[in-house]
Amino acid sequence: MLRPDGSALVLTTDQAANVAAFNALASGDGDQHRADVGGILADAPFLFALLGGSLWSWPTARLLWGQVRKRGLRGLAAWMGTALAPARGWLEANYQSPVVQALWAPWVLHCGLTPESAYSAQMGKVIAFALEAAGAPVIKGGSGAAVRAFAGLIAEKGGQIRTGADVEEITVKDSRVTGVRLTSGEEISAKSVLASVAPGQLYGRLLRGVNLPEDREALRQFRHGRGNFQLHYALDRVPEWLTPGLDDVALIHLSDGIDAVSKSANEAERGLLPETPTICVGQPHRLDPSRCPPGKAVLWLQIPDAPRLIKGDAATAIEGQDWDQVKEAFADRLEAILARHIKDFDQIKLARRAYSPKDLERMNMTLVGGDPYGGHCGIDQFFIWRPFAHSTNGTGLVRGLIHIGASTHPGPGLGGGSGFNAAKRLGA
Picture 1 (cartoon, rainbow, N blue to C red):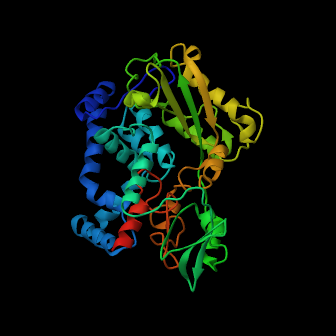
Picture 2 (picture 1 turned 135 degrees about the vertical axis):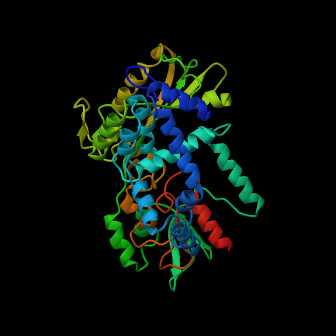
Picture 3 (picture 1 turned 30 degrees about the horizontal axis):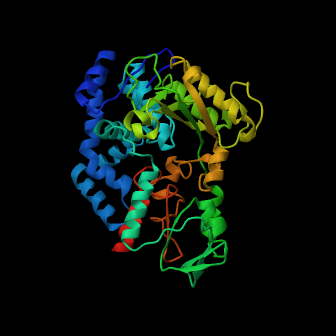
């Protein structure tokens, strides 16, 4: 984490070092961190089963009954209430150092939440636990290596991968899936179809000929979250951060703290270009030198609080309401913030490329308005209510169809939880 005044705090995978660093900033902050992470560890079997398992299932029912026996009914209700706390309350009540608060506040944006969102405190603690346990690893050779690994596994098991084959419709007969029809007219038969798409694509296009009145009514109420803005740099040499200790940090948040994160997220949710966006800076070359030529460097910037649709500019400096018009001006704003922290940035910059929320949707139609989280992640659209209040583990009236992806439980993330749950169901 790096603040505008140059103060920084780096989290490591050494808990003792983290506790000491936090306590040095404010007495007791390190001890509180140990308690928060320890609480997640103690609750891990229960918590991660809720976050990753099929909620409407007998295993989850037995899990909850076990917690009632362990904690008592009132005790379980109290645990649930505590888990719904917002990150602002958690951080301001328990951490005295604004630097420690600033370390954790931006992470809730990566969950599609804000510091004021229900259960953002719990997700902040989960992230703290995960980062301290495993750090922020990258895939050697680039993210495409993960895709190639999965492709190899699928091929090894006799599966086939086809790209550039746009599905026009999921075919259904007598309320049962029969396969898919491509835009080319080709039909592929299947007993089961897993649809990793946003609800608008599923019910507005792929199932448009199927009578599903409850789902379509719910679709009208479904909300997407903030957009995402990406900015990529090729650098002539490794960046020299003006604040010591950041050279080998995989992910750096540029933000002043809770209020700054809250302000930028609120501006984006109101359709405004944030005056001072929360910026996440990735340095993949530090962990994987193969990502760029020797002696060079790459940076990627993620702005998780960009508006999907632009109504104006919070700073009243950028004119226009179309991302194609304002993209580079917004990128200039981000670059100005970044350049204040890196020595001679203008001299080492070789090239940059910006991707607006509109660009991201062009690249992937499921990123509606550049929303990478499959829909707003507020409590009313999460857990047993994702994507709709009546949803049940991604299944519905069409037998053999399973809705997976970020729009379904357990929501966005890198674990592929909904697909994993679907695979277990199909393999049972």
